[in-house]
Length: 149
Image (cartoon, rainbow, N blue to C red; front, side):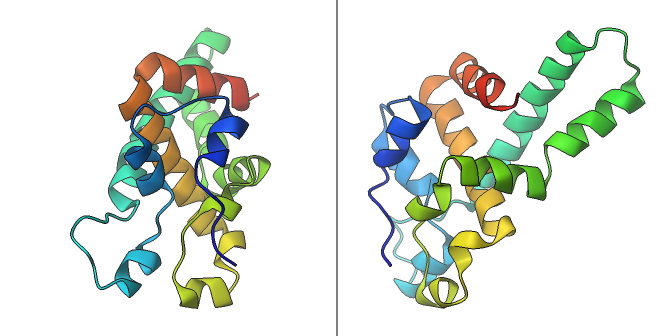
């Protein structure tokens, strides 16, 4: 099954990208790029995943500090770790049906890659980074705050 048009994720998120290339990159798994022979103009989502991890940790940390002003650092760290981990991010990705939009290589498609927690979590992080780069910190903050309830 081919990935759905990535623009459909904009409707789910209620956010329209100014730079559609960022959205497409966020949803492009390395297996897909590798099968195309590593075309230089096509990037996989791994760099965005790296940034998205940092953005998520920052914003969730901020939300936790604001929500629990009397909590100690250790408690805040544990709470953040419980929210920003592969399992939780995969749950978030599933709530957006993100798997349907990820471009995967044939091997990952055959092994149900659209359902793998690791692929879903990574794509979710990449999507957060794409939103951050496209719309700025406040936009990313708003989307995360709305969806991490």
